[in-house]
Length: 167
Image 1 (cartoon, rainbow, N blue to C red):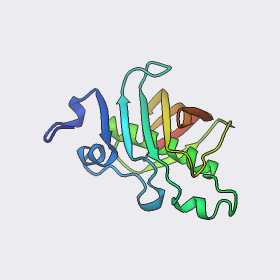
Image 2 (tube, rainbow, N blue to C red):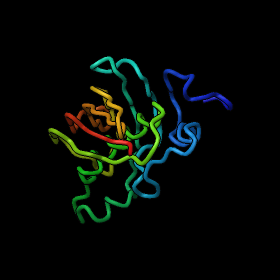
Image 3 (cartoon, rainbow, N blue to C red):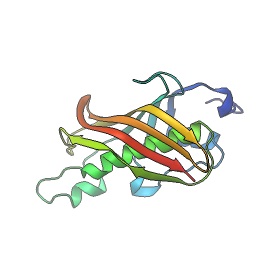
């Protein structure tokens, strides 16, 4: 984003680091420290995706010294599957902030989940893709989406009906 550009005037964000997007959203937050999974966002859009209602593509760089490889599992390191789901939830939280939702974001569930592969220390790039199915605004703003997680371009997780709310 260019300095001074208002997020509400932008329909799509292409190729931005997560921090510059959050800065433009005036106070929107994602987890920090070791739980911050998103590094780069090739695309956030209010249009497109499988359902024509919006999409997010976010990325995480993988390197062998990430904290979870040391403890999950010694001698057989893999990224915990729950962190892949966390990346999808973070991507949806970013989408809600992009849409202007205010409040505290909370993961609310996943309808169906399939693990088709794993993330190893030798991998390079994890990609989270979410396809918005519906957005509801009332006492809170709720977004429901389907999502895929890819490692080095290979599909490894599929999730349906991922839910995040902003309260």
